[in-house]
Image (cartoon, rainbow, N blue to C red; front, side, top):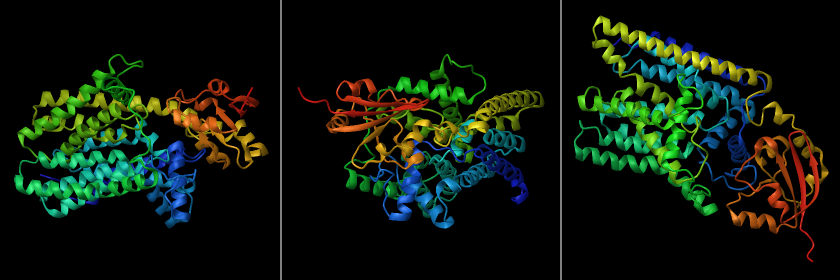
Length: 505
C-alpha cells in the first residue's frame, strides 16, 4: 500500500536539493560560472536577442551550430531580472540543479517499489555526481535539457495511465521544447514513439492516431529552427563534417565514460567497450523483463530504462555518422540518472520478495556498492576542489585565462584594434569574452575553402594560446609556408604573429 501523498514525503528531496544548490554556489564562488566556447555563443546570442531582436552570436553571424532554445531561455531570464548571464548564472544553475535533484526524489518516491533507503542512496549519488556538478557549474544548455528530460518522464507516465489526447499534447510539447534546447532532444521524440509502440494495453488504431499526432507536435519547434537555419545560412544545423570514428571506437569512448562514473575501475581502463555493452544490456534486460511480466510496465523506473536504451543508441549512431567532440561525460550526462535507476531499481522488487537471508545478502551488497560509489565521488570531488577553490572553474573564467599575458596584450595593443586587419585565433571565443575584440577561428586543415579564404587576405594576425591547442587547425608552421611572418610577440601562455603576403619575384 502506497504511503499517503504529503509534503513530509518530500522533505528529504528538498534537503538534497538545497545541498545541491549550495554546492554550485560554493564551486562558483571564486570566479563565477564556468565558461566554455559554447557558453560564449549562448550568452552572446541571448544578449543579441534581448537587445537587438536577432539570433546572432558575438561574431554578428546567425547562430546555427546550436538550436535557439537555450539562448531564448537565457534571454527571458535577462528580461525578468535585468541582469546579464554572467551575473545570474551561478544562482540560476544552482536552482536548476536543485530542481533536478528534487524532481528525481519526487519520481523515486513513486517507483513501483519505493524505498526510503534506496531514495536516500540515489539522492546522495546524484548530489555528489562529478558528472552533474560539472554540468551545473558551467553555462551549458544541458542544465535545462536534463530537467526537461525528467519532465518528459512525468508526462510519459501520465500518458500511459490515461491514454488521452491531453497526454499526447503534453509529451509532444515537452519533446518539442527539448529539441530546440539541444539537437539531441530529438531522442525524446524517438522515446515517445518507442513507448507508445510498446504499450500493448492500448488498441493499435488508437495508438496509431496518437503517434500521428505526437509526431508533428514534437518536431514542430525544431522544424522551425532548422528552416530558419537553412533560410539564413543554407545549412540545416551548421557545417557538419563526416565522422572520423566508427561505431567500435565510439563504443569504447562510451564505455570510458561509465568507467569514469564507476569507482571500481582504475585508469587506464582495459575493456571500456565491454563495460559500455554491459551497461546497455543490464538496462535492456530490466526493461524487457518488466515488459514481458506486464507488471507496471510504464512505471518511472521502466521509462528511465527505456530512455537509457534510446538515448544511448541514438548518440552512438549519430557520433558514428557526424563528426563532433569525443563522447564524454558532458555528452552522456542525460544518461546518468536513467542509468542509475535502470541498473539498480530492479533490485527493489527482488528484495521485497526474498527471504530473510537473501535480503540480508542483497542489503550488504547494495550498501557496499553505494558506499564504494560515494567514496569514489568524494575522492574525485576533493581532487577537483583543490584546483577550483584557488583558480576557479576550468574555462575562460579560470585565473589562467583572466590573468593571461596574451589577453592583456590584445586589450592594450593599438595594432590589434585597427579596423580592417583580420585576426585569427585558436581561442577566438575567449578573445571576445575577455577583451571584446572580434576575431575568427583559424581554419581547419581539412576545410580547403576556409584555408583559401584566409590566405587571400593581404595581411592578418594569428593569436595562439598554448592551452587551446587543437590538432585539427592549421599550425603556425603551415601558415608560414605560404605567408611571411613579419612580427611575433611571445608570452608565458601564447604568442601573437603578424603575417603578410610575400612579394612576388
